[in-house]
Length: 219
Length: 103
Image (cartoon, rainbow over all chains, first blue to last red; front, side, top):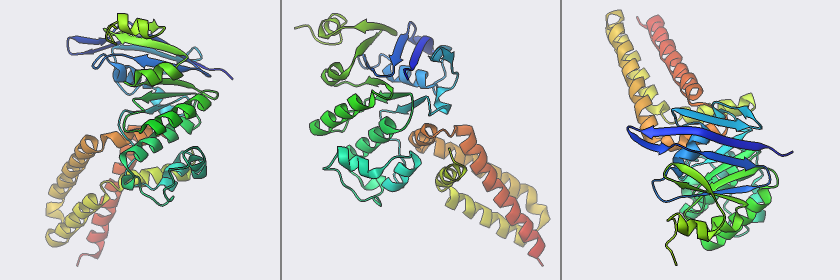
């Protein structure tokens, strides 16, 4: 079944400084939606505004045309991967996978080089492995949409390729909104791309639009 | 989400401050044993103050981990309300027990 996530009318200011003002984003099941923008443009704020855990002066987030005021209370609708690792370090891999109703052996099928014991604690994993687990549990858990904020940070090029393959498979079941500074990877996997510039979203079609908007240096 | 899974998550969160909070509870029970009812008001305020401190430090230093619970459908007020509520009940039970067994 196809679901739609639409976010618009989002207004966010920090003091007198407007951060988000003219936003329109639509995600759909079966589609990876990319979001690019320079540092400080409000990409994370936009993700958190959609997730609902950042207070905004106005916001409209709709799932299949039904407004949801606090999407973060509905993991069946949306899950959010922040740009930092959020899984408590004291938990074991087995426990984390139990909490998210996932099979640990499936992780080994996708990432065969990554085979820590199920009793390994999150804090004992390397930075890249921790990031991988954070991405995996959010991406694989049942939910209509996932919001991924800089998922590729701390990952090796090989892991990035595998995460991209994972996202490509998972988009069959859910809609994915992703932002990262590795714009080439975002361009490669995105079916639709938004640029965030001066608090506004605009559709981008390729590198030409990224150059003309000032996100990429002109060649 | 299953009831058992929710309890397990609440226990995980409570472990963040259980040792500190339980030490405060034991200290208060000891002081109540020593000085009796006249000190009760001070002990209650001491516990309330340490609960506020706990709330502040966990929110400040474990902020990132709240996304774990949110992604599993547990809202922050539920997390705080149930764990602090349980801790408060434990405190009251210890004071009542001290009152009963105090010579």
